[in-house]
Image (tube, rainbow, N blue to C red; front, side):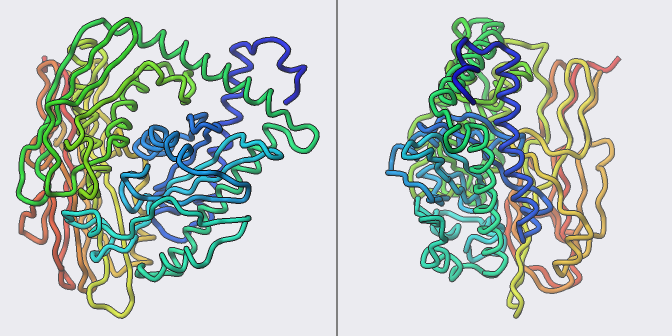
Length: 524
């Protein structure tokens, strides 16, 4: 980048090229992370996200990875950046949900980019570790406090002066069931950030060719451009106040029908989303920090914007998110949050969509399957420790002009399934059935998508935990369309609770049956 190239304001084509180049940094980071990771959860399921931020922690770019990772990281990053002094050659790690994380398995690594003595930007990646030290395998327990969910990492320098601090990493590995796998995954995250720093440096210019001023000006123009495009889309939303309330099935600790209440105020493209009226923080682990709540709400509004709107801070400047402190959606330390990130975030999306349906009826689909259908399995009393974590798709809600897709991830997650061959090679498990759940989508002029059935046989005694939703409350249809079929969890012929844990014997089978999507419109 040079001064001549910035002697006049950038036009839309130049900014689109810049957006592609900075987004490519994130995409290459992700490819590097997947290729270097040891665990199937990161390597095969692609349970990670990568992003670039400016020197103040404002989002510059992100790859099309996992919305709940990216939205929460973008919401919390400015506070993380402001809380410490940064130095070249550092990488800060964290997973504390109350200090910028989401839930404990998601470990974030942040690396500053310096040009000379100037702090210019940050690269960051967040990856889900199937083992983060909880007593139950998979580190997604039926917990009632944060400490039960595993190792809590407040922001700490994992890398200093470009060298891994073995006292830090070694201290973590002592708490984990399979240290070599964990070390490999942390090393992959470090390598991904190094790739990001190298590519971002090339974008800015290196040595005497570096032009920090030009890069900062381009970022300013880029954010202004994103805000203009986003504002144009948001101004199409009719002014008014719109409300909707949905519920979670339960919290795994006996509390049912937990309300997620959403109120949206729209005023000439300025949006205020308030979750006052939602349930209070609860004993189970469906609580979430405000950053996760914000991620769900911002995701919905991003979906209403044109595809060419850059996914940067400028696009979201006119959207404000709030939730009462001490509520389910803005919990206080040390409330448990393992399922808040994966399940409550999905219901936040449903509540925001439900409210917006009163404003833009012809653009909002029926509810999708509404759960990440989390399954955590692992050794029980065996000499060889293993952990397996999986999320599973279901049916998408139908829309005004289309049927819902079947057997896919929805909304706040964007991972793959673990290939059957990988699962059976690495773990004492056998996949007995993996199929679409026919006719589980809601009826209507456009049918909802069908859910999935995944039946796993245990080849050795093992622990299991399931954290799922839409087992008691079906995904709702719209405009006269039928509800999708609720999901089910079974161990052999026994029906399990939406959130459950236990020990299975060799030969037993765990079946996860995900919900279908809601239908749209009245059948002719």
